[in-house]
Length: 551
Image (cartoon, rainbow, N blue to C red; front, side):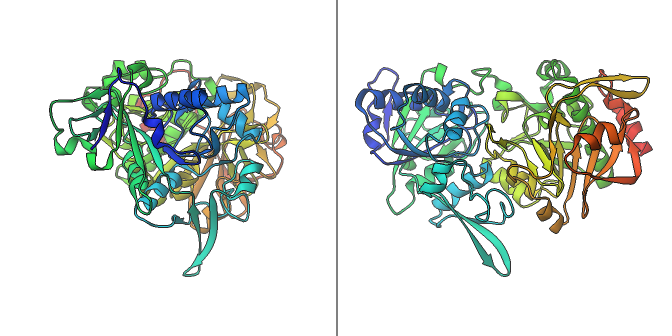
């Protein structure tokens, strides 16, 4: 029978978590993150010293700045007491500064599998399989020939999570293995009188059901602990409302609303959990969601990618299915929506939403006005299987072979996120980023772009610090790869990067090649970057259609 705790009851669910347990936690920033359970777990540890030596596994990042896991890690760091956690398997840490500190300073072993790999792994373990077998990761930092997905030295030494390269039917594949979870913290919206769980107010479905099943799988079925904000003590939910049936649930804990937010910037918005029909998301709402403070350079790149997508849509003659990553790519969905392309170019986000307006920054993963919602593993099937048409993702470094590093240099680390699976699986990858790192000042006047001040940090390097996307693997499988910046566009060819497009006013040698650590090819048929992306005004559909017709 499910044990249900109300807010007024004394909590003692910690007794079901033994020292040395493997704890799985759901979450995507604050969406699906059981913040209250994490808070109470750490409070009990400080009071009693138990449970301790936990190995934590997540499908994404259950944190934002000073919230949830980041708040716990912050106090651990400040007190220099790391006995609670003996290791972490976590796909992303960009919104948890203290997770980054702990990883870079090698306080705890940390492994960084991509979100798609981690979420799929839970489903495989739930099916009683030893791990996940996939081609994703070949030729990247996940490959055992490189780093095996380890993010610091203690992870390399401890070997708690393993990646093994196998040859099956003449093709290399990777087997991902990690400890089976003994207990889990998951977050849902409500529980009924029997203890079944629903997610009607959640902005994503995440990997909740698969994490629960992984815990319950044999041998050694474990304990499922769910955080809810509502308890229905009078009736059972309708079958289609149930995300997790009560026989799979052991403990339900009601949380105060302040620890049950949909996203870091807001507690609850009906648009984020599909309580408003997508067709009723008006232009005024779209305007409210548009970030009016988007830096000029990011706006240029996002607009140029939007044009590329409309061109792809015209060539295909049918709906384009598009993934947008965090950062500059996430800005594209509002550009397309405002220009009336929402039905022609359908955006999907790795957390599960289809359509709508993808939020940016710490709220990334939540979409306003989506028309459908998949679990994270089901969404990643669209990526790994090449079901989507195109992905647009950010970059930190690019090298002469077209390899991409989105997030890892010696003093900066955010983890792979969904990047590796999305980039490797998509048939077309459009990478987006500033040409150099730092403050850049531009002037666009009389149809010409002028660089008034350039940044000093080179992003186009001889060799990336860590490979998250392999240019050679992309070419092997015939993928289309392009790299978009504010001053040029590159194509990936058999000879490496090739400049195919520059704006009027840019000197290829002075403004581009001299700011790179390698010399790219230059197309004999170099094109002019479209002027409409440099304007401060929004791009109208008629202007976009005119440009597409002329190319």
